[in-house]
Amino acid sequence: MIAFAAVGVLYFNLVFSHFSRWIILALMILFLLMKSKLFLSINSECGAAILLFLGWCFLTIFWSEVPALSFYKATAYAMSVIGLTSAGIWWARSRPYDHALDIFIPISLLTIAAAVLGLWVHGSVIDAGSISLYQGLSRNPNLMGILAIMTWPVALCAVENVRGKRKIGFFEYSFLTAVLGLVLATSSRASIGAIVIATAVYLFGAGFLRYGVLLLVALLLGLIIHLNNPELFESAQKRFLYKDDRALRFEDIFKSREKIWEVSRRKAEDGGFVGVGFGIAAGHREQSDFSAFQGTRGREKGNTVLAVMEETGKVGLVLYAFVIYFVIGTPLRAALTTQDNKFRVMLCIVIGTLLGLVFNSQFEAWWIAAGGVATPYFWCMAGVGIGLAQKIHLRKSSPDFYRSAAGIV
Image (tube, rainbow, N blue to C red; front, side, top):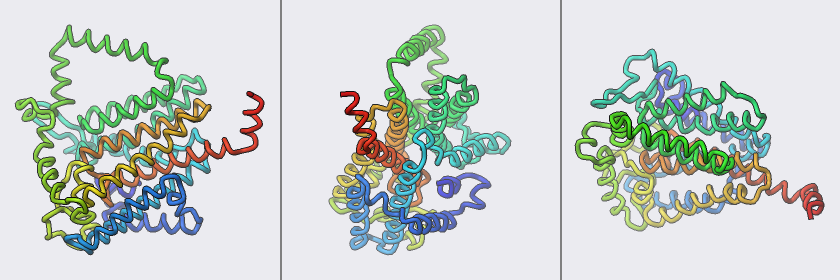
């Protein structure tokens, strides 16, 4: 995961390049194959949906505008999906559930390094008119926001573990606050929305009523601030809704995305039922056969749904919906059936993160990109969710479970 995320981070990209990330992925897949764990994802509840979508991606090679490029990208994407999902399943099944998210600690360390070291690097702050956007060592505030999303579940898990042990947890709560401050500093609306979604699902799993009073107080406090200091509210509105002066002038919060989405919408219509080929930007025939490994692309697509329709058509869009349904539905069903509250909270952190990432990808379109910055992370998180769900199923099918159930009856 670090190999893909660090490509866009200054200094770290000297080690993790567009080419070296594929070597690292190949080594991981070889390791999983040697341990007979590579196909855990295929043998899971989501295996059929994943295979159908990947199979369709490969089929689009036959009518692709650049067949060789589609082949390379489909192969790389399949490696990421199958390998990272299986790695997540294996990790979650072999670790205590309260440490299931420890696999994402390295990516959190990358986020901390990119955020902290960026304070001493020129160009870490972008001037967007009347507001400033923080990007740290990353090349883009939105990338910094995505790194914050990938760190958020680790911070939530740390807070939850401390809360369960009834400790003060000064470090854990400070870490959570720092990550929140980081994503707010980027003003990345897609990332802020993702974190809001992840937090809402976590609170629901942890017992929403416990936080009802705090939420009510926060809403009342916000209302009081708005009534007594409307300038502060307008400043927040400008920063987190409009993001730049041009969008504010037109009173259109999606001004920065309109042109990208309009082009992608037209190209998605060109995709028809079967698409123009996996990994292809319609009409960009100048794409090279090896651009999948060079980090180049034909066009920014800006929305996963539109990108899926363009590349794989309406058939691919239906299969994409099935994948999302099973990937999120599997841990969700486990969360709704388990009697272990702590286990449920952990599952809710995973579910919330996955939902947040799906939301974010509708603005960044990394989900269908073989080398997307968050693609490996998404599938590894999906694997963790599947692995945790399988642990619950094994608990229920064990003799101890039935003995305890009989005792309750």
